[in-house]
Length: 299
Image (cartoon, rainbow, N blue to C red):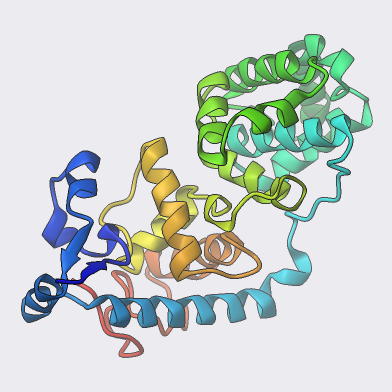
């Protein structure tokens, strides 16, 4: 029998419910006969699932280009051939991870950058400088600028200082490790940083020649979107190994030049309307939009 690889085991939660990663990996390859038997149990064959998710991708990317692209705040132009540019991208990833509101994270980072606090020689004073900037922003804006995960930021920046103090910084690590091990290395080194490691890969992909399969950021918005369209069986926290697999699956089924950004923005704007019981105009059949006939439902 010719082995056939399923598009993703996340697509079939009913069949693989309760299995751990090890068990899932052992049954990744099935025969054509097995695939036909799945079809008789109303499971979607791989080509049907793939077509459905490609259509969803096209709808979301088109919506993103029309509604979000011109105002996208995730647009950066650091020279990654220079150590200071690489350092700032890594620190910015930490800010996005630990300060949950994007605009607040970007503004805090910009203030730190403006004062020269993100230079390698200033990182020893990061905690004091960060608290000083937050205090100034509180006074300047008249709004609370509390950072819930500030200790994670401090610990992670401390780890970066150690790495970037070496002559070959992250370049040396990538010489010794493949991208997956590179992600795991920084996951262990930094504190509470997981999804944004894929953001760092996305921002560094051209300079470091990182494959697309590691460039889709499985943050809470993306996870919720994938859950809503029945690509994932649950919301909530995923392990690093699961996040790697999700990023790979997104590269296969949702590949586009903006990576995860369209799906994050779609959840922030369109899905949120449905979650709040408001009309969104979305035509994608999902857990929230059961009346739509645009696409067949999985499960």
